[in-house]
Each structure stands twice: as C-alpha cells, then as structure tokens.
Image (cartoon, rainbow, N blue to C red):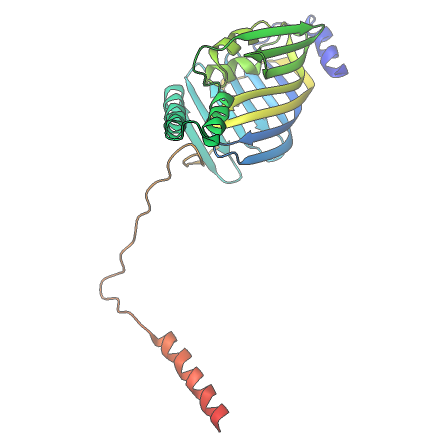
Length: 277
C-alpha cells in the first residue's frame, strides 16, 4: 500500500502520460457452468491505456488482452503457443447461447432442487427475471457494490489519491458486469487497491482477491497489447465447440496384418506344451 500512496504523490509531479502499469498479487477462482473450480495464485502486470487492457501473468506469461478501440479480445497461453480470439459481439453471442441453454434446462425441471441450483448459477452471471437493484455503499475508503441486497459484486479499498484509468472499465466493455453494476463502478472514487471483485468472463464466474503492489503512470504503446508471434488459433475450452474430428483413411493397398496376434498365439501354445510335458 505504501508504494501505491507514493505513486499518488509522484503522479502530480509526472508529465502527462497516456497510461498506467499496475502490479498486483491475485488469488483467482474460476467457476464454470457445471460448478467446476480452478484456482490460481499469481503476480500480474496490468497495462491500461484508455479502454484497452492487458492482464499478464508474470510467472507463465498467460494474458488476457482487451482492445476496446478494436472491439476485440484475446486469451493467450504463450507456453502452449495457443490463442483464442473474439470480437465483442462474437463473445456476447456465445455467452448468450450458453446461458440460453441453462435457461432451457431450468425450464425442464420446474419446482425441483435442480431449478433452484440453475437459478443460482444464472444469477451468478447477473441473469435476473427483473432488472436488479444495485447500490454502492461507502465507508471511508471502503466501497461495496451490492446487487439485490445480498450479492456483493465488488468489495474493495480504494486509493482516492490516484485517479488513474481502471481495468474494470475495460472488463465492463466485454460484458463482465451487469450494466447497472458497470455504472456504479464509475463512481468508486479512486483506483481499487485491495479487496474482492466478482464478474463473468466468457462462461466462467470469476472471483478475484487481490492487492495492488505498484502503480506507475507511463507511456504505453499500442505494440504492448500485441501478442507474441507464432501462436496458433485454438478454440477456447468450455466456451467454443471443438472442431469435428477428421477420420483418416488408410493408404491404398494397405492389407490388415495379424502377425502380432499369431506370434502371441504361438507363444501361448508353446508355453502350454511345455507345461504338459
């Protein structure tokens, strides 16, 4: 926190720059539509320039890149040499299709525990039968954004001395938050420095517990949002359908052989003959 406060003091002395680099520690839990959890703890570098955002895992290099100016986002794993790419509209359409499947499943089990469970999942994605009530609560530097009185989407301490652009605006542009929550995020009054944030990404519900360790206003070139060369476009697991498997046909003239089976049979027969003797 001291480094963040120091950055606030230096911010007034720095010449105008176009972006900010934020380092933070994160415990991140992703919960898919089937309730499966994946948890990681890591250090991250966030590069924010206007509505553009890059979240970079400083250990393994995994990254999420959101280019609001291009209306596109990428999820990349450089070690696996893989990347998934979507326009904002494509991602929204795929997410809607997945949530529509959940709604259809719920409609088939009215009045059962399964219906209640599916309701909870849908509400975790901010899918409500009626527009939700959203409120912002402030207590000193503590901020909470609460949906329908009991669902806490954001619970953070803010640094009100740093009015730097936030990564939450870029996430909101992809549909990570309900529009009413996204509006409240604009009134936090400072950069979120520590706390918990819940949002949706692709078809995962994300819970982030984080603490900002460094904030550095600096020039950020568009090239810093580029991906490493040589990545292969790969369907995003759990969000895109896998390509159909292509069955290969054997080369012409290939004849089936059972020589290995014959050898095993002869060895067995030989062994039995020895036992009989």
